[in-house]
Length: 346
Image (cartoon, rainbow, N blue to C red; front, side, top):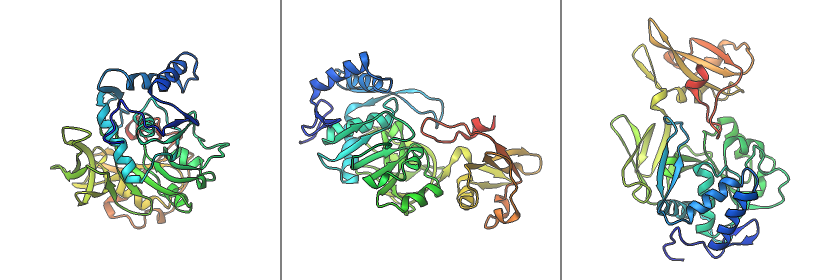
């Protein structure tokens, strides 16, 4: 099909085993809204929005990079994003895909768009933390958040390619996923970039951008994304990166998490990487005001209080060593499992 537009549905598209065209999908949408289960209603609403006369869709941002807000996203940009994903991950018409993400958010919407545009055979299940429970099907392509991947380790051998996004893949989860025959990628993106614009194959360090995307630095060494088919403006992020070339980068951390301790700028994510194999619960590095240093580094661990010996901080530079450990019973997080550091500390 040449240059698909949002008005087309690929003739090989299937939903739960049924070939559906545009009219069929509108009928399905109405029945989902009227008598569908809770998770089906947003799908119905999205399909009706997708096939209406407007050239854009209203979307909620997740709120991890500021307050959640509603933005207008071009439908054609969503189609172009779907095609770029298909090219990058080598997805073909007739491939089987699993839709297990809530359609309320951009990642769930985009899985549907990819299926309709690329002609995928889409199996659609209720979003849950165990999306492959009782599954008998082999899939070519699946998208999950880290918690779903963690809970599906024993079933993932039925998946050829898995993309994991919405929150960072921990070192511990990466180790487990690398043992599987599945090809697994961590994705990088946000609502403003219509899901991912880059992906990192697990085991490798760098993210590689999708087709028609290039990257550069802004004056803070943060990532600037040039994706003319997705956004007419350059998208400036708060992510500190090391650029390898205009197509590859290593993610270092977020600008808003940087700690200035005694005049030394520290990136918490870099310290967390050094501690990753020594702490088995979820944890993060943050800071507290300090009269002498300006900010002192603290380690925040989820769960019951426990003792650590001095070997915990081996391999850390002098300034990186936490001055205090705080235990918090439950971290606050987004729907996709990304830890909300500031809110957890309140």
